[in-house]
Image 1 (tube, rainbow, N blue to C red):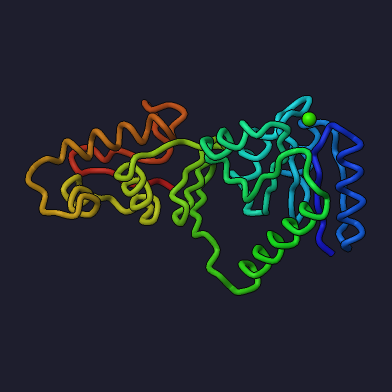
Image 2 (tube, rainbow, N blue to C red):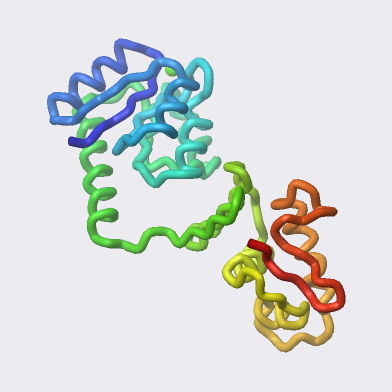
Length: 229
Ligand code: CA
């Protein structure tokens, strides 16, 4: 049975959603506090989340963002304001759908069913999982091209991402700057290997706790770099 978590501080709305979803055969739990909802969303297994946006504690935007950093579970956002839809789109939070209040419970149920069916097809069809590299606190999602350091997402340019991923995929291998330049910039190196140095510096600023003592990308003096594992 699919298990759904509703995070909604208006209890009458939460109960109404719950009643309709339970009639359709879903197992439903409610949290009225955003921070508690987030904790349960991250720590427990649910098949779908329904999140109100304005919540005490942690708001729905932040809960959505944090769920998406680690899970592909469908997320429906519920908003009291039509204006929020533009905001949701603009933020690129990774929500699968949104409804505005007041909505008809049967429409909500229909959307929940559609998203669960789509998600189950995705899982069940043996669709390739995202290819993820995890080394200590560093997590690189090669498919989604996203990077997290100790759970916090960092933004990378295309070349920074390519360079970091290439090094992380070839741990303990020492690469010269020339090799890295040819590999990542996909052309014959014409001596512009300073580009590599600049990119390594920028990557370190994003992933290293102390750039003077890098724990991931090590400089091999006079040779190049290697990714330490
Ligand atoms: Ca609310």
